[in-house]
Image (cartoon, rainbow, N blue to C red; front, side):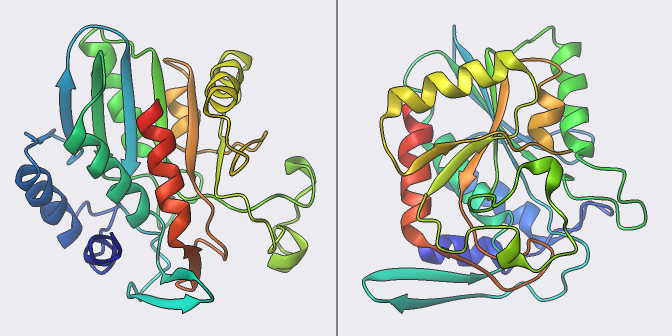
Length: 263
């Protein structure tokens, strides 16, 4: 597991230019794992498996924050835990999505998308989640409305303040609980119907390592929510996501994978 995440993490991808070795690597790995990836005109990678209903869309972005230059990944032991350190956003999400695509859905139809551009535009931070918009347009063109969309991405630990009171200029420990032991969170929903669906899956999974919270932004889950019930889900990572020193226990990835396979 660690090795594959490293392989993805060390291969950067530029969401503005839509270029980088990560793209070809993901395609190669998907083929090696028995999938048939298709690349659309915007460089988004699609894998479809199964048939019938329900239809669930799993999405993970390929690109790295444009302000980050160093993309290496290290591992170390902390007690009985394996810790990953480096640029985890969103190599971890891509790895999880790749494993989901390899196995396919237990029933119904699943669409696995690896989006080329989720991070903010290098020169215009107000431009975000560009590829999710492209995906929504393609789904509408095909008259396809998923029953659920899940944006797989790393996320922050517990918020120390309500989202609307977060002052991002303050030090990290004043924004987030650095001692939070929650493995994963469901969030990213802005509409009541998405919250209802997220709450259903959280209660059904019955694991205290999974948290549910109101925390949403201008990301892929926000865009997918225009089409279908949608939420963001992913393992907790500590540290700023626009810097290379992000850390995460490997156990968080394993919990995330168990949860998503239950969906």
